[in-house]
Length: 560
Image 1 (cartoon, helix red, strand yellow):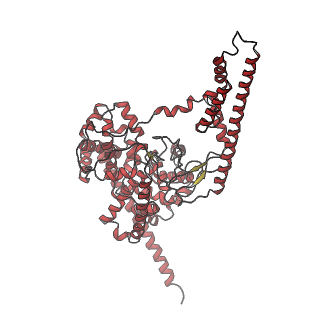
Image 2: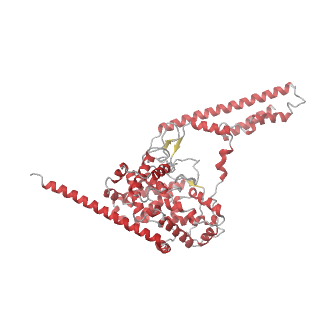
Image 3: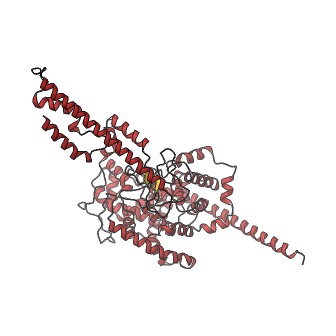
């Protein structure tokens, strides 16, 4: 029996490194250890109940159990002390540095820490296991064959319930350890907290994904980013001369470098002119005693906690959430007809990661009311533009992928069931941030065509899988899709989709003919809005002229 115990000790030593801290190996758990010793030699049976040798052996086994428990407890305490010491050293060194790709921030849920920041922070979105097969003839308009294969998007859903299978004691110990040890959290390039528990397809906005890329590919992308940054710094100096050139458009399509993205977005959105044309407007809206309706205010305050909850800037109450709240309330006062819709929170939060809140406000005004974005109709009463966008998306899907469109129709999967949030937020609600920001580079420059192209790219490389699925599985597939895409790869292939502006215009006109009431209402509102803007512009010009005349008159009247 002692030989068996020695073998078990050696087995424990070999296995202990791979076991969770504080877990007794199943082969050494007290009840099973005792029962195996008893059954091996027949000890403590009814025939040998009084045998002294049996009692001695049982006592030795009990002592062996105590030694194992003591060893496990000591290892657990040493590991906890080591983790706490190491974490404290990291926390003491942690300083916010927007240029550091591996910033360490305190856990916002730990005592005495704050996970928010007033500055925009950005990070690379890790990639998922969705390995999209890409062939070289991507310009082809042929439809995928049913036999064509691609990596399975679906992951083992049972992984979400692992915690429920643990014993209550284990869960209590884990909760206690989490309270005792202050966790240091890393953020990626865009400011999203890197966390293995960050689930795919979760609500709350774009976040870290889990698609893996090689170190070689990472180095290549970093080198490309550095080269493009140098080129863009030179381009910005001559922006007025080169902004309408084809070369500029092509460079935007390749992706604006993250270091200059905020500045380029402001130039694309004409933010400097909007600010200069409306001096003090944003401040007056923030200080206004006139407040939006209680329903709008309550909705904004409720949605703020749901917007990018995995981002360091918005993970907890603080400067980031305060800025977001002020911008959204200010816009609800600026455009009382639209007020507030949930999709605006994601878009505004994205802007705030790249620019100060006043610039983010005017960027929001620009994309809502000016070309090429013109998003205001998506959020008006009745959402007329949302209906048109979904109609166009459905028609171009049928044009480029007729077999897939027919399959989705047979399964009663209408495009509004899975793509509405894609269009209302321009993918900011859940897709990887490296994809989101590249889409917005092009959206601010070219308008809606890039949005449709990205949607068609999803369809193209999802088609082989979708052909095998039925309704509920298709809905689950689209729910998990955001966490399984490689942003740069999707953008690269999106421009191979042969979608033209004339296709979009054709279906847009067709929608207007089928829905004259919606089209007329939109046109009337657009005309009224333009007249109001023109009136405001003239009033500003007259005020400036009067101010200049007053200065000149005062100067001329001064005594010599």
